[in-house]
Figure 1 (cartoon, rainbow, N blue to C red):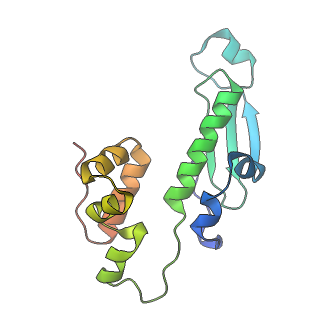
Figure 2 (cartoon, helix red, strand yellow):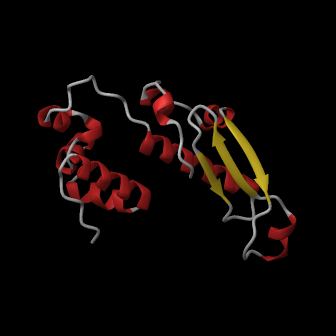
Figure 3 (tube, one colour):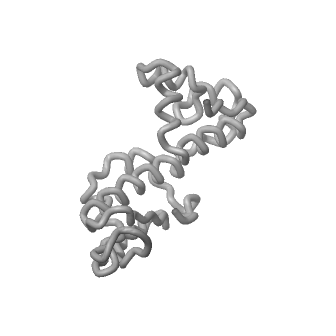
Length: 154
């Protein structure tokens, strides 16, 4: 995934989260290419790897694990959705980053508060965050930015 001009994007997060896969794909430049590496002779003869570049944000994701272009495109779309959620944040009004406001904002809530908002236990939320290394890294980056300890990895 590449870096992107996130500051240039002013649409609220809800704009991106409501898009269907087809709508999201329509906003992307799609490249297919031959992936190198293991996978047998078929992999070297077909252009099954997929690269998506989301034009509005500049985010780029790839998927090349499968020998099926269809499967790789679906994986790339999932990765793009994850990347949008990781990198796009609704802006808070200037001067609103008080400790109380940060704790109340869903994007910056603590693990206990976030779990409560989602209706799950803190342990379930932490287990979910562990399923994706980039999500885990972003959660800990946000916690550090607000003076909180990193979540323990095990």
